Image (cartoon, rainbow, N blue to C red; front, side, top):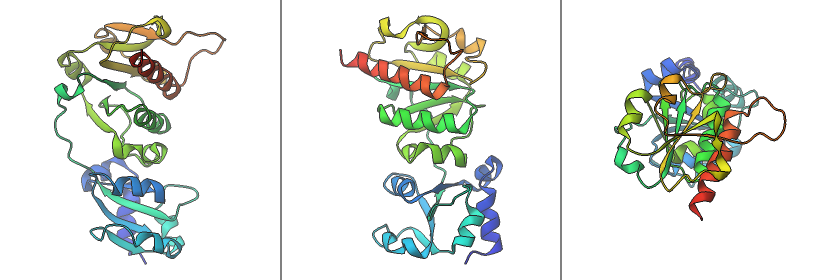
Length: 249
């Protein structure tokens, strides 16, 4: 049984202020929790229902395990239908972004992406295409937001997400910067080369003028039908696919 103070702490982690204060975030669902257990992330505690207890036996004994009731699980979960396992994970102290480690590959740049679902899907897409680093503007949604973590389906455990002032960071990275824009060149006739950055903008406003000014090559997904725009997560997936297809030529 969870104490009132434990419930209060765990529920507070649904808010960025308290995640930052305590250096902790929650991961929900057995498969997602296991993804974090098997990486460099430090899983502090796993809360689970009695039914799932046998599965916990094979996990590291360095983790605290606490069996709780479904009622308590519902109190601390951010989901309408809670899953049987919730992991309490420590937010890592990321080292400063090493620009040299970005060479000879592609990384993503997110400028003001706000929707947690989009953010989570972009991280999952990056993981699928083997993109290890995502560089975000400070106003991009917090990667440890419960909805973001849930949408990544465990991929967050394998993708490095950095935050900072893009107008300061991007000029320091001496690689081509491709920007997704409606007036860009057709991605299917673009030579992306073997390294660079792909910048994706805010859901409603796109890339800010300050970021547009730093772009070396504007690119766009050609529109065949009549839709006004593409969801940023879907657009990112299409662009990543084309970038990787280019690398196989």
